[in-house]
Structures are given as structure tokens and as C-alpha cells.
Amino acid sequence: ARTKILSERRQQQVEMVQNKEGRSVTKKDVLDTTSAVFAEFLGTLLFAWLGGIAKAAAFGNGLALSAMVFFTASTSGGHLNPAVTIALMATREHHWLKGILYIVAQLVGGIMGALLDGGLSGVTLGSGDGPACANITLTSDGVVFGYEFMMTFVLVGVIFATAVNKAGEFGGATPIAIGLALFVCADAGGDATGGYLNPARMLGPAIAFGCNLSRSWVYVLAEVLGGLASAIIYKTMMMKMKFFIPSSQYEDRQHGTDEVGANTPTMHEFDSLVVRRETIRHKSSGKVDVSQ
Image (cartoon, rainbow, N blue to C red):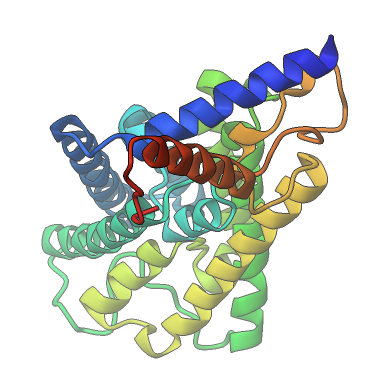
């Protein structure tokens, strides 16, 4: 009986992939993607603006992130951070092309948010200092890298635990958990690095005001690598999944097995099945579709 259930489930998944592969891009798809990308731009802009002028930096940024995730989650998923988007792309939890658009929107939003901070605060562009500019003259590159790597590791881990791992069922508490993660990390490492945990938040003021621009590569590298390490470790060790296979393709553990996805075909197997079935169908009609 179990074999039959798994076989039926596999057939449903293959048909789902077939429908997805064979469906052309519609106007609705374009509108949905446009809305999502705009949400990432606007959410990151507002997050950068609010975080840059927060009176209590760590607490204010945590609250701002939580509010902006609530604001954008239903439209774009509420990434608001290139390190988060890259981690989701690398673990195949987010489409790569849409992810690239997200990253561009986030970076532009971070710069625009910093410019808004500067405009409202009367700070001259390129002055070398301004809202959200951290004083790291006494902090070595190694310390900056270590703090930003570990803090981003924690943030992305919490995101995977509450938003990617459906077993947790945190629901409406997810944005609060994400904001708390930023708060505790920024409170711990803010004095040493500024507590950015986000390439868009760091590059925004660096480009707008020229602060720490020559050391921005340390932040970006640490945050991206920290996010990737956290995503891969959480997905493989905590969720017990292969990091390069979308979690949606794994059998739900609630169906009676602790071997998550042990009998579920991979995306490569799905693609192979789709190609074989499409080739047979076209051959039977005297045509072979080489676009596959």
C-alpha cells in the first residue's frame, strides 16, 4: 500500500513539473514578478531609512526588519537582504532569475534608503560620514569578517527555521522571530562592525556617503558566506535534506517516516521523466521537439 501511495505521489509530482515546463509565461506571471521585485525594493528602502535613523540602533533595526517583513511577505516573501536571497537560491528554495532581480532591487533600495536618510538629516553626500555609517577604524578586517559571518549565520538560520522549514508552523510569528534575530546579533556585534548582516544595508551608506567603501568587500563576502553556510548546514543537518534539492520535493515527515525524502525523486529524475514522456508523445505524432 505504501509503495502504491508513493507511486501515485511521484506521478502527481511529475505531472506538476510537466505542467510547469509546458506552460508559457503569462501576463499575470509578469505582473506578479514585477510586484514582488518592487516590494523588495520598497521594503529594503524603508528598512534602510528606518534603521539608519533609529535611536537605539540594534532594537530599532530589529523592529524595522520585523515590520518590513510583515509589509512585504505576502508579495515577495520579505527577503530584504541579498545574503538571504543568495542562500535561498543556492539551496534551490528560490528561482535564480527572480532572485537576481530581487538582489538588484534590494541594492537599489538600500542606496535610496541611505540617500533619504542623508536628505532628511542634512548630511552631504560623499562626506565620509552619515546615518548608518559605522566607525570601524579600530576594528581589523578579520574581526569584521568574523562578526558579520557569524551574525548573518544566525539570521539566515532563523529564517530557514521559521520560513523554509514548514514543520515548525510558526506562521505569523515568523517576522517577529526574524526581527529578534537581527536585534540580538546587532546588539552583540554592533559596536565592532555596525551590525549590518545585509549587503544592501552596508553598501547603501557606503555608496551614498563614502563611509567604509574600501572595506565593503569584507562585509559583503562575510555576509554572503555566512548566509550560505547557515542555509546549507540547517537544510542538511536540521531538516535532513540535500541542500541542492527544493524542500517541496521531499516527502512530508508527517506521512509517517523520519527518512525525509528517501523515496522522492530528485528534480533531475523529474526532468528525465518529463523529457522521455514528451519525446514519446512527439514521436507518436511524427514530431520531435529538440527544445527539451
